[in-house]
Length: 456
Image (cartoon, rainbow, N blue to C red; front, side, top):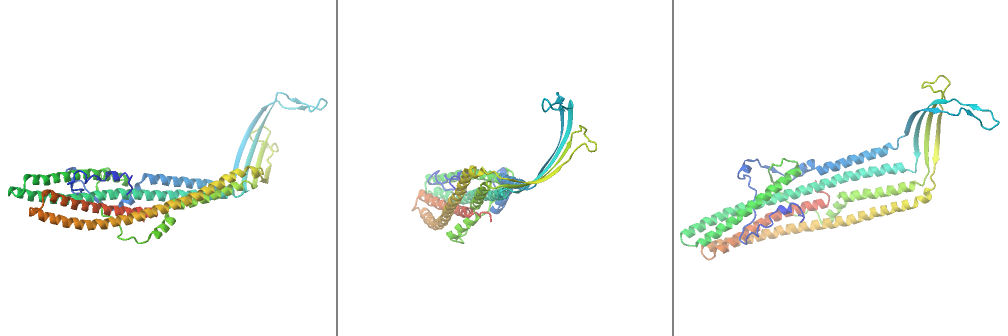
């Protein structure tokens, strides 16, 4: 588990530090005292939790909105391939102060009206046949950006699933710890009863009885800590899953495979194919390449087809009489070339080349980081499984030590302190084993996440 995880703060790290004799960590009791005892506690599997979390994640809803935004931009770019057109109808009124006009001193004068009215209408339609394929590159780029947005959603789903897995396993750890503590309490109660009988028979001192009672008090303190932490984890997990804030549930056992089904190279290959960041950076490389092509295309000429219709009515009447207006129609083709781009485009193209190089280097850097992450996760999983095996052996040793000290205490060869120490060591190892198993399960899911496959 990540050391900086918010859930790690809830785990009872101090269970063994309350006192040397303090016997550790507790379990989730399905029937809790008071109001909690009456509350229904439902079992919840990890897969259920992940499914519910993904369905109710606000972050994923935001990411999906970004996908829809990218699709809208892509459609806008496609619309630019359609013909453009406009239509207008204008009314003009002119006041003419000078009504006599001569071209020269000797020329015949022209007599103008004091005022004039005119209606002018235009309609235009244009279609770009060729513009250096800039529109094509723009469409491809927005399409690639849409794919990148979808990959971001997939990556966010992986993150949500992993955070839920962390929280779920934190709850599972607390439950397993509570189970061990409950067992510890039962054993300590038997020790107290036995010590009480020995005291009544004059075989032990009152101090021996008090030592066992103090041990029980320490365990009860751990039980309180665990239940508080369990409620915190359940509340926060309920928020992640979109459940009511007062929901209560029990995490089911999560096991990791005894041996990984593949070697490190297989997991590395899987990460190269499935990691969303690498796929996204691959698309970013194509975007950078398209941008460079589009910049270079600016040096090419454009070909535009156009059609225009005009309506000119100088009569001043809104509806002109016959033969008092003209309505010409024109069609033509335009070839335009901004040849200044031959020298103005140079630095823009250089910038696009640099961005393409940055995209290439960014992906190569990300590949190294992913390989490092996968290797670390793989080795940590192997370490977690080895830790489980070592603790299983340690428990066998602690059980034998506890059995010997139990016999010696009954035969008055060992002291109550020795007996409590042996019992504490046993239950400490039992708790460590349960935590190690949960850590191994989390290490396995961390490995799956590092390959982009936590959601299977």
